[in-house]
Image 1 (cartoon, rainbow, N blue to C red):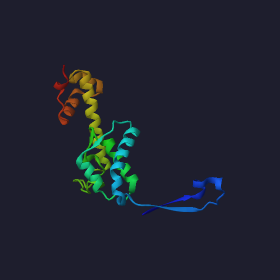
Image 2: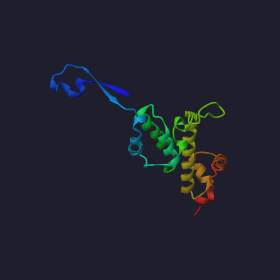
Image 3: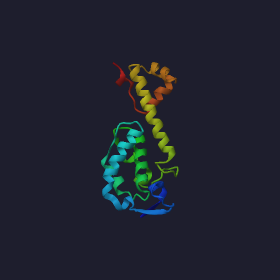
Image 4: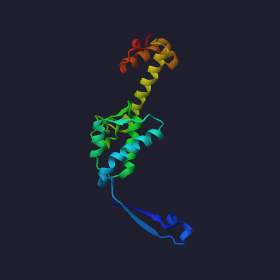
Length: 176
C-alpha cells in the first residue's frame, strides 16, 4: 500500500481552526486494483490524446495484454506515462506493443547493449516518421516529381532518392 501525507490545514483550511497535523491516507497499488485497469487505460488514452492534440488511438490486442500483464509498481502515474509515450510514438491509429516503454515489453537489449526502447531508438523512430511524413507531403504537393520535392525540402535530389529507397516510398504513387 502507498501512503500519502497531507496537511490537515490543506484539507480543512482555516475554517475549522485546526492546528496543522498529518493525516495518512492508504491507497492500494494499481496491481491490487486490476479491475480498474481498463477504465484507467481508456481515460488516459483520451486525456493524453487531448493534451498532445492528437487523434485518440486504440490499443492493439498485444499492447492491451502487455498493459494488463504488467505489475504496475509505479501505480497510476506509471500507467499514464506509458500511455503518453505510446500515443506520442504510435504512427498509426493503433498503438502496438513496440510503441510501449521497454519495461512493458520485456527487458531485451540490442546489439549495442541498449534497450530497444532507449532514447536513441525512440529518437530514431520519431525522425523516421517525421521524414516519411514530410517526404510524402512534398511528393504529393509536387505530384510525385522528385526534383521539385527535393527543392522544396532543401535537399539534393540524390539524397531524396536514397531516402525514398530507404523508406520504400514510390514517387509514382503520388503522380496524377
